[in-house]
Amino acid sequence: MGWILLFSGMAGTGTACAETDVGPSQASASQAAETPSAETPSAETRSAESRSSENRNCLRCHQMATLAYRNPENGEIVDLAIAPQALSHSVHGELACSDCHDSDFGQYPHPERLKGETLACVGCHEEHDDAAERVYRFKTIDEEFKHSIHVTSDAPEVAGFSCHSCHDPHAFRNSEIGEEIAQIVRQDNGICLSCHAEIQDPLRDPHTWLPKPEKHREAVRCLDCHTPLSEDGQAVSHRILAGKDSNRDCVKCHSKAPQLLNRLYQYRSETDLANKGWISKAVFNEAYVVGMSRSPLIDRSALAIIAITLLGLGAHGYGRYRAYRRSKENRT
Image (cartoon, rainbow, N blue to C red; front, side):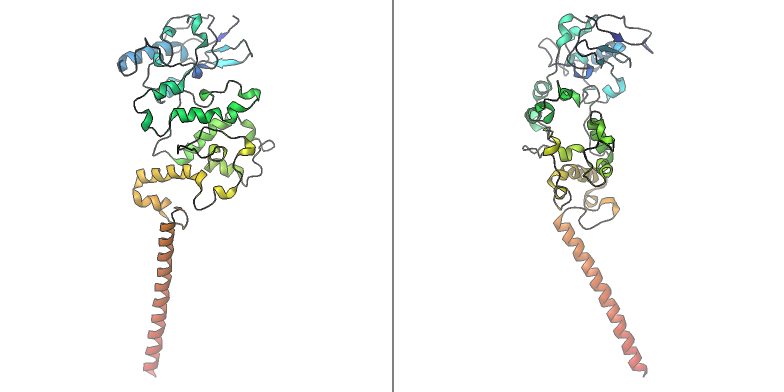
């Protein structure tokens, strides 16, 4: 088949994988997963020990950093390596490999019929009992994604674009309450920049119209401007807009109640609430600036306090002046 496996000896296991033909998949290792088959036990029915044992067997080969093959259709090297630590900390870290992959992958060489295995994120996630209670609905995500520029574009760069072009199932983890907003922005924008490298080139950056574009990238996620508000109220839409259709109106962010940026500010507010309590939800960074909380009630209260303080200082000064004049009149 002309496929080439690239690897070095397995470190720490005393084992090396024999060089052999491996069937092509339609994506990289991070794309090779499928809805569990009927004969595959569910994650709930198998013990943690058996899952761990199964994963160790797979990682004997797949933890090698140089494990890859050359796609005969386009000549590109497809990475098959999986970082064990990233996998264990990912959202799928508690699953066994065969909860997503066909259990016959346990055979080596892998059966020829498995080379076309594909992924079905929506089908798997919507089968869970808590699917209706989640903030993110995968059916909604699927519908939004179908209208994304990554799907509707005819550009060859996005051919075969799927969930795993952005979300590596062997490493992906959701942002959590308590994480620094700056870190969330870096992680999210890092996904975009992994493909859109031209943005970091001052001569090719399409954001030159934006004042201080680098400052914006440090404080705002790409998707805050390049996605519309989700109709179902989800925190993030998966309908990525073309550049010409994305937000270029500064007021949509730099206003008292910016709907686009509120998706990120809402998370920041929740983080402050979790870390320091409800008072710090209004008083960011231990110092209040009018307009920072984006709450009209708090802003009016702050302005009232400032006005009362100024009136008090003025009344105090006037009283001191009157007392001075009275004492001067008494002396004369």
